[in-house]
Amino acid sequence: LRLRMALTSDVLYESKCKCGEVIMELRGEPAVTLTCFCNDCAACCKYCDDKAEAAGKTNISLFKDGEQGLYGTSFFAAHITFAKGEDKLVSFKTLNGKNVRAYSSCCYTCMICVGGKDFPYHGRGLNTNTLTVKKTGERFLPEGPRIMGSLAPKEVWDKVPAPKSKFIPIFFLLFKLLPKILFPWFFPGAGAHKGSQTPGMYNSIAGVTEEVQLSTYHALGRKLEIADKTQ
Image (cartoon, rainbow, N blue to C red):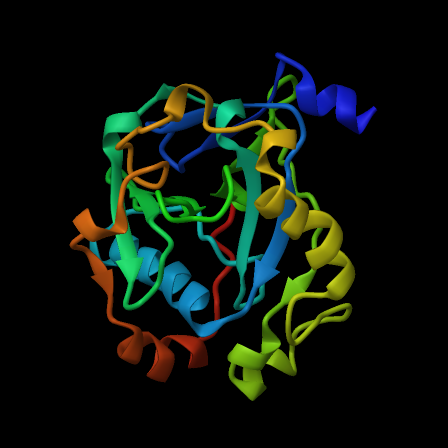
């Protein structure tokens, strides 16, 4: 059933920013869902939330509800279509990172949390909190492992509910991630986005100038209580 749905041409889900100016239509089931607690990912979540607050906007946070981890769900690029607002995406990055991420310029919702030309497979990580079921409009919140506690502050990681892993769980790595990286020809590819310069899709990180100042967020951002801004 999952294989059939992964190959379907039907739009099953949507990813939409808070104000509805950016909408992605998504075919098939997601490739991977996880919540990452590493410092870099958490800093990117807080960065977008802070930009929205400073501008007096309400965004959809990238943090998992009540937790200080990045809540991402990836779909293969070939299964992603922009219904509107592709031109409203803005690229940003972290120092020494390889991911190109993208937020909406209208409300500062982080839409693409994992992507860019150098990302090792054709999945593009989307903000799980922006996902809805196409037919019903209900929120779509798939579950996945909570990972990378080794790179999170102890006071943050201690509050994360089980199950959780300080690294990437072996089963998840072997059966979810590595096959898509090592055998990409078995999975959907870039599709119409091949060579796309849309922020977060296949643009090069070398051309991204907006950068999260990690030292600020590592020192301050992780110690703040995370408000529920995911709906």
